Length: 377
Image 1 (tube, rainbow, N blue to C red):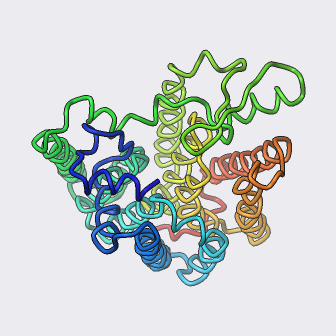
Image 2: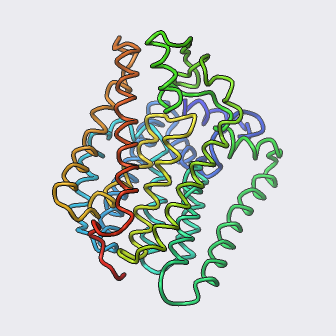
């Protein structure tokens, strides 16, 4: 699929105008490099995979360095993440998501290093690969406001201006290259118009109700995944993005309230728990939840897990974290090797319940009494 898009570009076609590219503009760079390096599909895949693998190794380093900046054990945090990364090593080389995850980790490290404006810019860079890092900008802004010392308002305004400026510059460059306004919408909003995916929470619930005979349902292959074609939620697709927006707003309110109530952990606590909670809110409410989207959260959960002070509670969180990817194995081969709808739907349910448990667990950490983050950063 990636190579076919590259061949269109190589032939002179302009993404967003001449064909449906479906990704933000910076994702193009990740296609151009392997495309220029090889003239065959096999060579393209080899270079693309090496590119993603190199970024994956970078994320291990970033998790270690960021954890250390948070006052956590950098080696143990990175080791926990590395085990899960090994479980997913084959699949992550085929997708773009690890690149966006690396941008988020870089933004966290920059923020904790005192380079706040650079952290906002890095979030926008990540959003120009895969849109989800933009949801974390309010979390970073709240962390900046709640952090002690300095003129916080000026720093926040500078960060907003830098992020907005980079986003506007990217849009203007696209327009200057000949991309129509409809192409801008496609680049950043194409995913919002998709049907409920079978792996999403609403899609999974509809799927299970159908399998139990409680309601009608239909499953069809579309865009290299499976969607729910009919059922009780089918008519809500067009307006479902407002449900996602409401869930994000609720997560922001929770981050703000928890951040104001307790100073334990300081900015590290707001960044770690707030980022995890916001990404979980998106994943658990969005109409699309492709398997590779798990890279959005598995790069962040180790900070929340290692920030748990209680040994037994931390062990339970570690076990749940490690269980997430074995649960995914049926998703990677369902239908393909005859596992069937019921097994696939149940494995999706277990995964989604584990993620919901993590969200509730993170909310329960709000008071700071069970946090291992240092009180002062």
